[in-house]
Length: 65
Image (cartoon, rainbow, N blue to C red; front, side, top):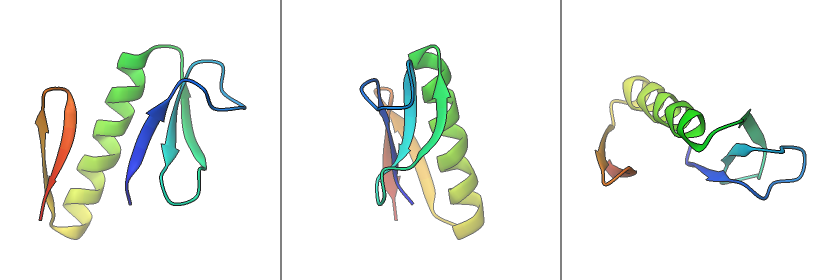
């Protein structure tokens, strides 16, 4: 399930980690770095549970299927 970071999400005064499919906030962070770490953990968790692998390129996630 893909996610993204937004700093313009109602209900979060910082950086929100948001589910792409439904807009649900799964985390709200004071810093963009904390939000990126959360995003990394989500993708790593998904990769281990679905056997997909993800790589980091230039600070963004590039799914490799």
